[in-house]
Length: 112
Image (tube, rainbow, N blue to C red):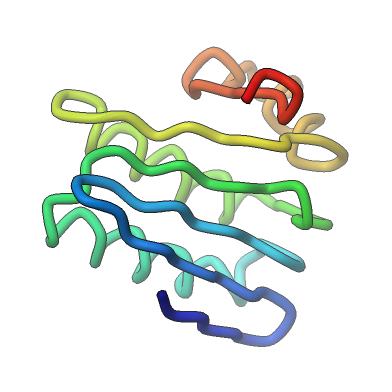
């Protein structure tokens, strides 16, 4: 497991056999999106095709953050899956307003 923090975003990654669990805490925006992009690109390069992203502690997400999520979802969709857990607040509104909710597998914490 490793944890990286830039500005107002903490990205914690736990690797599993063929996948990974990524926990986000803070703000996912233009300044911090490259940190998540790097973490997800590393997981992809390692062949981890099942990624779960925990967003319960994500306080903010702008279009830069949304683009990183969408880009990775598209990248692994043929061979794996990207699941968002704990979607709420600004991220939930951004997904709804943009019509991108359907692009992601979203699981409520109570469904786990």
